[in-house]
Image 1 (cartoon, each protein chain N blue to C red):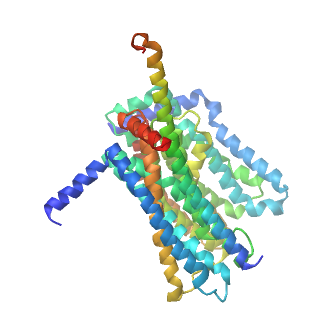
Image 2 (image 1 turned 180 degrees about the vertical axis):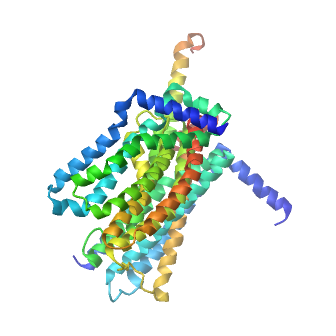
Image 3 (image 1 turned 180 degrees about the horizontal axis):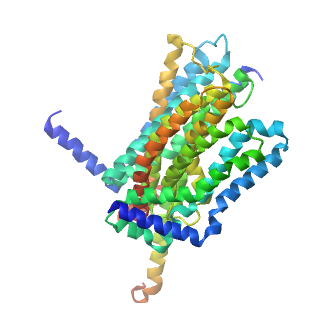
Length: 56
Length: 259
Length: 223
C-alpha cells in the first residue's frame, strides 16, 4: 500500500466516527420527543375511553 | 467587571440550571458550534492534505498527524472536563453539571477511538505492525477503558441522579490515577523495550506546517461543544420527560414537522 | 471507640469466615486453576514457562482478587448491615478500611501463601521468589483497596459481573506494572527496590485515600 492509502484510511475513520458523534445525540433527541408524544397520546386515549360523559 | 455585570453573569448561570432554560440554550447554540467546528476543521484538513509538503522521512503518512494529535489532546481534555463537571456535581449537587459530565463521555470515547485507530494506521507504514505497545498508545487504550467504564456504570444504575454521581466519582478517580497509569506504562516500556523512544511526529515542525494543526485543535474543540450540548439536551429531556414543558415542546415539534 | 468498632468488626468477620471456611479457599483454588490453564496452553515445558512464570502468577493473583471483590460488601448490603454502618458513630471510612483489610487477609493472603507452590508448578526461577513475594505482599492490599472503591460503586447492582472487571482493570494497571515489573527487573539483573518502593508508596496512599472514596461511593449508592 502506498502512503496515500493509509492517509485515506485514517481520514475515513475520522470522518466516520465524527459522523456517529453527530448523529447519535440527534437520534436520542428524536427518540425522547417521540416517547413523550406517545405517552401523551396513550394518556389522552385513556381519558377518552373512561370519560363517556364528556364524549361529543 | 462592575458588580451589576457580575450579578447578571451569576444570575445567568443560575437560570441555565433550570431544565427548560438549558433546553432552549442548547437547542440554539448546538448548530452554531457544529457549523463553526466543521468550518475550522475543514480549513485545517485542507491545509493538512493539500498545502503542507510531504515529510521527507514519512512521506504523506505524516498528514495523519493532523487528525491524530488533536484527537489525542481532545481525549485527555474531555476527560479532565468530565471530572471537573463531576466534581462540581458531587460537591454542590447541581443537576446540570451531572448531565454535562455524563454527556462528555461518549464524545471523549470517540476521540480516544480516533486516536487509537489513526495511531495504528500511521504506525503500520512506520513500524511495520498495526499495533505496538508504545506508552502513548497503551495509555490511550486504558483511557478508552476508563471512558467505557464511566459510560457503563452510568447506564447500569437505574436512578439517573445516583448513576451520574457514581459514574462521576469514577471519572474523578480516573483523572487522579491517569498520570500514575501513564507514568507506570512509560517505566514499563523502558524496562521491557529498552530506551528506544518511538517517534510519532516528534520531529520539530516547521512553522508553515503548524498552522493546520491549530485549525484542527480549534475545530475539534468547537465540534465537541456542539456534541456536548446536543447530548446534554437529549439527556435533559429524557430526565424531565414527565414535565409539562417537555410535553409542550414535543407537541410544538410535531406541529413543526407536520408543516 | 474506633478500636472497639474495629475489634467488633474483625471478630464478626472472622466468625463469618470460620462459618464458611470452605469459601476461603476459593480464591486460592481459582489461582491454581489459572496457573494450570496457562501451563497447559503454553506447553508445560520449563523453557516456555520459566520466563513468564512470575507474570502468570501475578495475573493469577490479580484475577482471583477480582473475582472475590463481589463478597466485599454484598453480604452486608443484602442484610442491611451497610445502613447500620452509615448510622454508626464511627466514621464510615474506618469501617470500610477494617473490612477491606480483613477481606484481604481472608482472600488474598491464602493465595500469596500458595504462591511458592504455584511457582514450582510454573518452574519459577528460585532467585525470583523473594522479589515476587515482596511485590505480592505490597501490591495485593492496593488491589483490595482500589477494588473496594469499585465494589462500593457497584454495590447496588445485582448483576455487576463484567462491569466490575472493566471498572477495576484500568485502576489495577499501575499495580500490575510495578508488581510484575519489579520481578522482571530483578530477573534482568536490575534493581527491583525502586519498583517495590513505589508499590510501598502506593500502598500508603491507598490506605489513606481509598477508604474515603469508597465511603463516598457507598453513600451515593445508598441514597
